[in-house]
Image 1 (cartoon, rainbow, N blue to C red):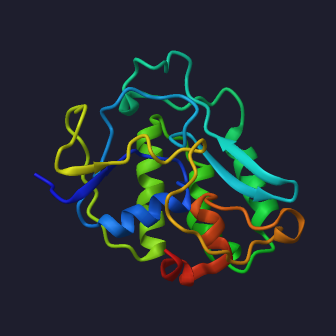
Image 2: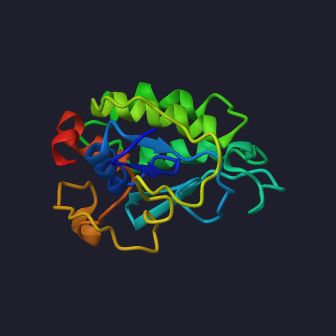
Length: 203
């Protein structure tokens, strides 16, 4: 049984706050896969910095993925070419950043290969991000849904676009900051593409 750690959801290109928590509580992290899928969360969306300000990228899920569907059973929809849209958006937003081209080949396959389940897509992306950030973390997943975790900090609903991050975020260089100023708690890729190997020091 994990103790003195945290339970976190599985997100798509998670926000910086998520990795701050991961880094603080590692190695005692439990990842939630048995919950019922909540809509309009970071589980299938990520925020990046576009020339016009914050841009939300959403991974569409198949119809029928309602609130009573377990997160691990939610399927990705390919009714339209969202992968092409996301990849073009990432390129338009970050190609002029210091490290986009350095990491480009790592991320490209996620916008070419089809994944059936959102959870598998998010897990493989998380494994990549942890490797690029040089965070050593054994991935451990929930096996049943528990309402509470007495020995863990429950962060399953804390990290949300509707909540102000409770971790301090100092400004770092962002490509379009002269237009809209520094935007806090964007997807980890914003930090990675702008700061590269220094990203771990920021966290």
